[in-house]
Image (cartoon, helix red, strand yellow):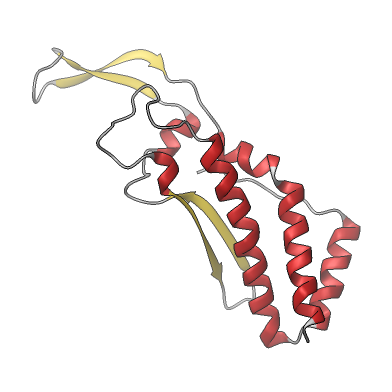
Length: 157
């Protein structure tokens, strides 16, 4: 899975930090978690558009489409750190990184023989960094959602 860094400039960070200061520590976690859920959902929605749609070369029609495996999860740690993770679910979307990064093409030899050994063809599939594009293209929207959600929570106190 690609690691994508979201950068917030100093004024946006200061504004977000000031809003967090208004919320007491117990409510702060709920505010941050909700803001990350909402921001991550923006990336999920964009990724579902960016990912190769069913029927791409090498797609297996009987399996769940890759776009239907994209979701998010927000984790909190005892240190007070919150992390939003966006990606394909396992095991249905386990091949997402092969589409994202590309991979070597191996074929059975002899062809169409059950139990045949595989041979590297020396070719690679083209990488399609759909998740990275989805994250990069929605950065401003993610930041706006995080700040507006924190603002809503700070005003409700």
